[in-house]
Image (cartoon, rainbow, N blue to C red; front, side, top):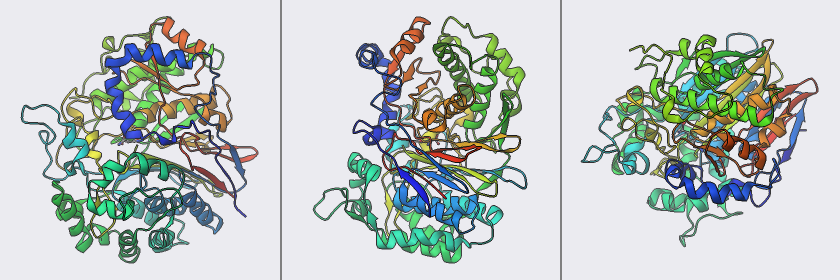
Length: 595
Ligand code: DON
């Protein structure tokens, strides 16, 4: 019998927020901040720390195995694989394919992501199945005639489609690290049935379909699936049936990744992208490879941090921030001081992110320096504990010698001591909104994660420079931060989140809340979060953060904007009492399922 609990959320939950849309406005917030600060902080003041805006995650316990995912059907499929003797990787592959059907907003086979694996017997590893830029993309691809960044091209057009990596990544993970009890076809089978027979639209899918109507409805092949014949969007209780996707999944189950990357499906994918104005070719698909990489490793107060290396910025930035914070006594500092110091660490790590990070196969990333304790000591020396540092005064790589929504996260722990943290994405909710005709695959708009022009913000307000310039075959820099914290070599905490630039700071706060503040995982997942990404020079704070904390940050010179931060950190804590799963209440329909 599989134990589980549905999330209970208030009507005020952020479920109906469209991650990508709200994140796109982040960059613009700087200019309207003066108004926003006054109105929004007033709203927040007087609310308790766990205010009404965020429901409280329920802790679900299990003795043997646990899956925490953003959508309940897929979470149950993963828990069932664990119960039938599968390991965490088997379960992750089954969940990954299932979410491509049941959570089309972000689950995908037309996008990409990262799977971090802790192996009970063997080295930890990271599977990089990030999308690559088609061969025809270069550093001018997303500029207008005047040479300015053209967001329409990099966000709303088929030019933004990166070569999908998910099928290659999941298949690689299964082939190398699956238990051997299941074939790839066994693990895809539940997804095929759900695509073929359909399932009732509910929770976040209902919310996000309504919110993303215009992005989907503009493509007839997408409208055919997500709209009813009368033009209305599928609503709660309506059945979402995806027969073309079922056939594509069947082909992958039968012939493995070559069915997707070569032959008729690859040609149809390329044709769909080109018919919509994109440049992806069948050769780009054929050339795609998922890559196995050594995880980023760090330590924090006796725990080992294992996280995602480039082309994610997440692992480096997380370790950099934790290294800076290790020099303070956060467990005993006043809460306002802890928050302030975390924010100072965030500014510095995001400045380095902008300057140094990019595809490690094409740019030299100073990983060892950025993640070293000595480097953190230098950054810490620039922090005034009583006064906020202005973003303009933080020079990226100040002390380095230069060397030269929508997304979804799930966490899994099995009874053998293995753990998987997997984050994958189409970038925006439903990607570019285009379903490839005839094969049912929703395509991403991941290439906006490049710095399409130096020093020009992307959809998440993130700046970048040469290291993350668009280029043929290049992987755009990501913020996805699947993370596993180990204690004495065994999994202690498995976490990660969607949320674009917000991801890394969400993961940081889960780690600090659990390790320094001794919070249980449900409280850590639910607690209102803050975010600072160096530029814009603002601290974003979730509604419900106590008024006195906001006042304290402002008194030190930070400019605080209260707004909802669409992250969703589905996490597992391993405790002496067993596995404790907490599904993030910020998005409706998430589930912790264990046995
Ligand atoms: O890889 C990245 O950093 C982004 N494409 C992730 C986008 C995202 O998390 C949107 N989610 N809400």
